[in-house]
Length: 219
Image (cartoon, rainbow, N blue to C red):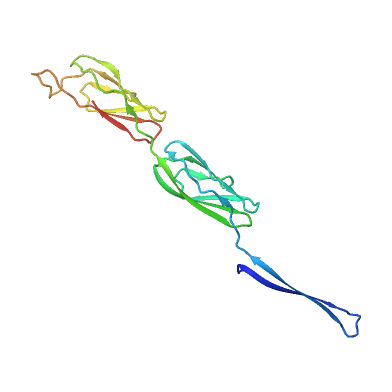
């Protein structure tokens, strides 16, 4: 039957008496109603995704119950790259490396029944940039070793912070771990009258093993 709705069906039962010379017949008739309904998919809860964070493991369970006791199969469209759904359990998991919003369409089908589709937005966040804890640097003297100074920056995701500096005086360096050291030399633009020069040093801090934003401070 390809048409939905109620269908009236007439049944007739005929009993022939083969021993009767007149071939008597006994007839019983009944009218029955058959209701044809569309297959109903499983019950699926629209997901309210928790936010994912780039570079971190993510998991979210899709909730669904069968409508007729059948086996459920899950699929997803539009998941951020790096995330996937378990077709048997409905668990979304993985690690994504790109921030942004994705509209995810979840389809759950049931053996012998229909399918149900829901959609929701999944947000992938950047990890916050490290926060500098060093506010200023001590003055140095030319031709004199600068005291080793640790520039501080607090990681926001438990990673290791690496540093990069621009504009340092000649003879000074900043290590990846944030230690400032060296012996400042007299550059060509050193002011011989005031015997000093002010440098604007730009330091960038970034957490390793993540793709988070970097923070920059000028000293």
